[in-house]
Length: 307
Image (tube, helix red, strand yellow):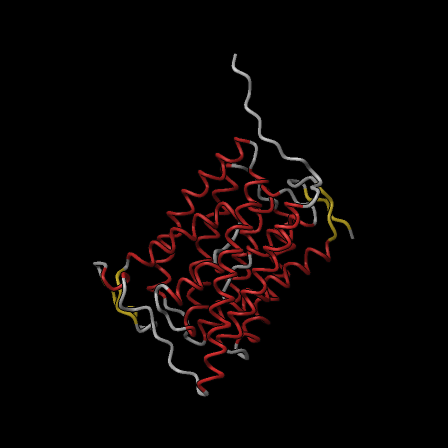
């Protein structure tokens, strides 16, 4: 069943869009990610213009994240003060990211640059997560019972001023590291159309030293607000939010998020991280191949002649 998308100005298969939303919602519930790092490239692959895909995917991220976080709130696995600190940084970063995105649109190279940005960021994050997860699984097998993971608690994070006690995470650290992490994620959210979970989840574990049990729920909490703000800013500034596309993705995403939250409880922390790393690397590889193989559209950068 073909459905016409008025803003994207293309016709797409309706059940296919529902399936994409379902799969991304499933991942949101399992890993604590908004799923934008996957849904935006998938929209590229089926012919949605990158500018519309980036702006519209944030709607689905909000819906699937909200659906998934309800289960985490019931289990009390959300650190709300930490989430608020990440959210403040994220909203500030999103404002900066929107400005950069609009500047790229004016230059006429937003499609190419967004794709390159995806390949670089996904490759770096996915590679680091995969290596660390493999090392953690090897150590667990060699040492028998899993040793308690050493938290990143006595480096620059603890040396900074304005320390706050985050009780749910068992941390007493400066408020600045969560603000910095949130700011970086906000910039990514605006430029790439992602919730930023694939960055903020590793950062919360390895930089802030948070226990894995509260990372997923806390990540979803900040993703909801940052993604909602990003959507409104894109709609106001660039008018690239396609409501029909958003509704189809949201319906599938809400259903998938509830299923994913239950599946995530059945897997160990190392297994969750390595699965997320493999998924990130797979998306990076597909986007990278699309850039180096013969493209459907040839991009060029030219300098206008001086008058």
